[in-house]
Length: 536
Image 1 (cartoon, rainbow, N blue to C red):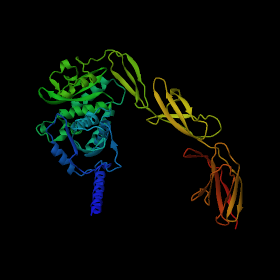
Image 2: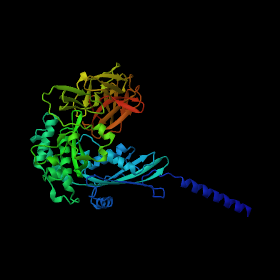
Image 3: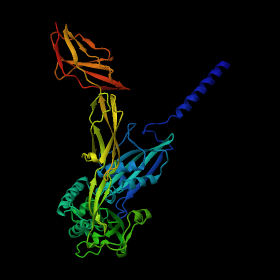
Image 4: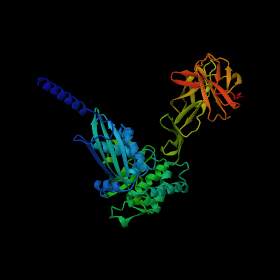
């Protein structure tokens, strides 16, 4: 009986150990089961000028029920983002494609809260220099984001889902893009002009072609009134539509512009600020619409006191990056042109800036595309240090002239992968780029090929230097379709008998060398093709 009790106690201890081990399993997949420790975060965005257009519950439900292709990441093969910048970049990319539901996997060593969602919005709506991003996105959508996560070891794993309501359709945005292209030509915005001249052309067009949409003034659910589409295509919008259209056209010309939300004469209002030289100036095309003498064009803060910006535009950070002039912009009576060059790096474009040294108004800004690739042709081993000609190209695929860089080679003597480093120099480029080229082993040819019964015998001259072995390839087709390859793994072997072939059949044969470096084999070019007809 004692033995039975002892045996049962051992069984119980064993089972408890198994249960203990099972409870410590860490789920590596994003499909971990829900538990009491599940982490939940959420955040809602709608631009402050239209806070009542849609609630987060309505937004989430309306977008969920729409038929849309989701951008989703599933299972262990899911792409996992590890920074708020990368999450924001991905959300922005999908929003420019008008995706209504975006799913993103995020992993962090720190526990995140609702504030993370709002940080993602900040990244998604930041200025990028592209006219369809930045404020253009920010003021033409509403977004609800939620995240469900769990802790696994030292990591917090979250699946983030963003439900987005756009104030326009994708087809409407395509119409805006076509019209913007047309206007750039009609208003001569593609030509070199001072920033003040370009914005004057844009401002004149908006003020003379867009009327205020009083018909939907009390209907916040009519979202189109807040858009560039309404202002540009339908020629009627509220202040937000005016401001977003000016932003879109100005950004298309490379101008530095923002949409500002706040109040005008005490009511919700939107306008723009734009940089000329080192200062930003206020513009309100809504209040100047239909007028010939503008009261709100390129105004300093002293003459713009009937406008009050929202808190986000009154922060030290925003104002330090966008210093607004106290006084109005004054046309320069006599421009003195100078040229400033900002070098392109391997990570960022540079530019050649032509501007007036008196008023700092910019005349033209020609991009110097970032250097991107280094290439060099493969060469054949010759026992010497190899220095093949290098070609450097920028992100536009254009060749960069040789006087803009110096070249250094490493590991460039023996067979294998050689390296080349380009050091950019001069007043247009800076930084270093690296590339590779292959040093191939010397090739050989057959010394003799003799036919035999249902086969042939080949001989070649031994090649010792930088050679590990040989490959022989043969086929009944001269293009070597359905060919067979024989590897000779010692460079000391110089003959090979090939048997079990078809009798009285013509075969095409070629040979090459190879050199094994580490786990990689490097091959010479194939020799010229020889033929042999097998015997009976």
